[in-house]
Length: 298
Ligand code: UTP
Image (cartoon, rainbow, N blue to C red; front, side, top):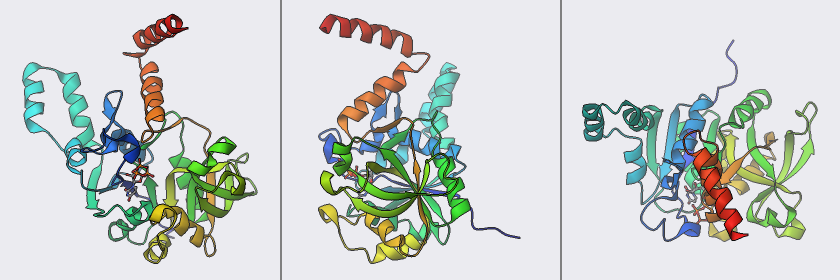
C-alpha cells in the first residue's frame, strides 16, 4: 500500500530586497550575512537536511551569485588548504558544498513571498513541500520542522509554524486565528481558522504570529496563481494559505524555542551573540568580555 506522498523537497525563498538591513544588503543578499562564522542561509539548509529534506530549491534574485558560490566547490581554495595540511578548514569549506542537492530558480521581480513560492511550482510538482525562509533561523537545538512534517503526514493539507509574540508586536507578522484540536500535543498543534497579514493590533485575532516555516500542500500553487497583490502591494503567502482553509485542513505548530529573524538588525545582533556565546571555542572569552564590558558601562 502506498501512503500519501512524503515531504522530500525544501523551498528556500531568498530573493527579497532586504531593505531593513540597508546598506549591507545593497549588493549582497541578506541571507549571506555571517551569523558567527557561517552565512545565515547555511543554517537554514542544514535545518532542511536534518529534517530529511536534501532536495533544496533556492529562490534567488538579482544578487544570486554569492548564494550559488557559497554552496559550490572552490577547488583552488581546497587545494591550498590541502597543501597546507589544514584539515579542519578544508572540512569547513567542503561542508557547504556537500550538504544537499541545491537547485536555483530566479524570481525576477520580487513581488512578494507568495510570488517567490509560486516560482517553485514546476520543481515541486504534486507533492507536499516545506518552505523555510532564508533569513529566519530556528536554533538547531529546538526541533520544529520535523514535527511539522509529522503533523502534515497525519492530518494532510498544510502546516504553518506559529509563535506567541507580545500583543503590541503582532502587527509586524501574519497572525492566525486558531482553535484547539484533540490530542494537539499540549496545545502545540492547533487548527488554523483564519490568517491575516500584519493586522492592526486591535483587530488581531490572537497573539500567534506566523514564522518562517511552512509545510504546504501543492494546491497552494493553484491558489497563488490567482492571488492578487495584498498588503504592501505584494503577493502574500499568508493570503493564499487563508484561501486554502476553505478547502483543506490547515494546522499550526506553536513553536516555543529559539528563533532569530536575521533580516532585522537587532534580532541579527542577538543571534550572533547568543550563538557565539554557546560555542565552545568562542563562548568563554566572549561571555567574559561581555560581562566586563557591561559592568564598565553600568
Ligand atoms: P521579508 O518579509 O523579510 O522581505 O521576506 P524582504 O523584502 O526580504 O526584506 P525587507 O523587509 O525589505 O527588509 C521574507 C523572506 O522571503 C523572501 C526573502 O528573501 C526572505 O527570505 N522573499 C521576500 C522573496 O524571496 N521574494 C520576495 O519577493 C519577498
